[in-house]
Image (cartoon, rainbow, N blue to C red; front, side, top):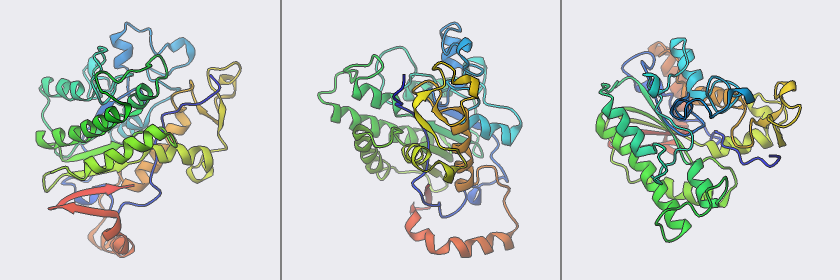
Length: 325
């Protein structure tokens, strides 16, 4: 597959007004819980289908959909020394390859089903943990009619109606987590950069997020995958990446022998581990997910630098903090 229809992750090109740790009760997050699709699946689909997909013989790494760890894994490794563990193996990563926001009845646990699986697991809410939502790519694939998903918009009368519902339900997932008692939520946008369906869906998502009624002490961290996708391909050096090829992927003849260096997509859909790592570095830089809370004097100095940005880059509904990056 020479043409890349890649899920990736990124930023809106601006800094959040304050690091995420500025409002936590602990110096670092105390757990990582993941809901999402194949970009962040740590092995649930592999376990569910009896070990046939993703095929390790093709170079997929430890049942992930790329050749290394994904960004929630890297966060977990930095915080706790170990990657995330799939929920079907007793862990807190509930993501499934192929998952969508909208339930399509295909048997793959989508957003609502993954949150339901979490609540059914009997796990307590960790108010100092971070809860990641990473969805949207498969909804756009369904709207576009690619990868065997032709016309896969269920009973919705139009593609636009489907995308609007996907955005609304995605935001509703944030509200559900908040209502369960989650206080640190990290979410991504619909990730296919430059795609008209994605642009429409992200417009609906922005509007839906604006209607949320979150608790006063909830932090919502919003990160644009679609913008990172664009930056990784058009300005890779800004992310510490070499020039990226989008005309081939790592599963094509001879590509893996090079270590996939300078190749954006591992399989034509999912970014390589190097791109995942670049995304994680960018996320961590902009939100300070692994930072230890500085001394008060240090934080005060940092506030001087961020102060002029706070009004435009961060807004509060009551005291709720929504950070965009």
